[in-house]
Image 1 (spheres, rainbow, N blue to C red):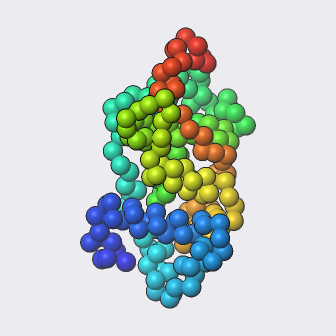
Image 2 (cartoon, rainbow, N blue to C red):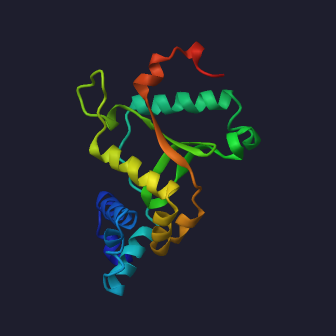
Image 3 (cartoon, helix red, strand yellow):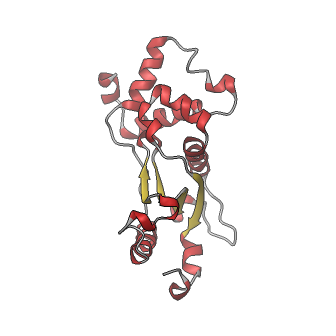
Amino acid sequence: VDTRVQQLTPQQLAVLRQYFLFLLVQPQDHARGSLLRLPVEMQRFASGLLLHRAAAWMPGTSDTTRRFRGEVAELLDVAGGTAASASAPEGGAIGALQLGPAGSVDLQLGGRSWLLDGPEAFFRPFGAALRLTPQERQRAWLLGQLLGNEEARACVVDFFPPAAKWPRLEGPQRLNWLDWNRVPASDRPA
């Protein structure tokens, strides 16, 4: 597997990983079981791609998105959220959550997951109603299945055992940079 994976670009590896994960978390048994009907060599290849040590590739983020995520993190720091996990709601962690080949959740706050969306998550031009790109809609669906659906996660664990250690979370909820900026800083929780 390593020899074949080295021939892939990071983007190609990410697409293959996402494809296998999407197959494994499908709600229909026949779709989810399609990998199990493949020859054992192909199953090993799929598992090898998911387990490969290469970091998960993520599309670039804009300065606006980085600033927005930084402001949210700073607010949580000021509120004392990252300083002591005992202050986290329901005893859960606060911060980003890395999920290997599945990507990441921008914010884990107690038992909930959040995606903090910047301009690159939406179609342009930005109007009164923002429209998420298909990639972002699918990302949220995949993360929701991986973190909230035990049956789907059990299928993924067969091919990617580290998924068994991921926390069970609600969501993901979404917050975008425009909604964040509409709330005056003085009205945000402190």
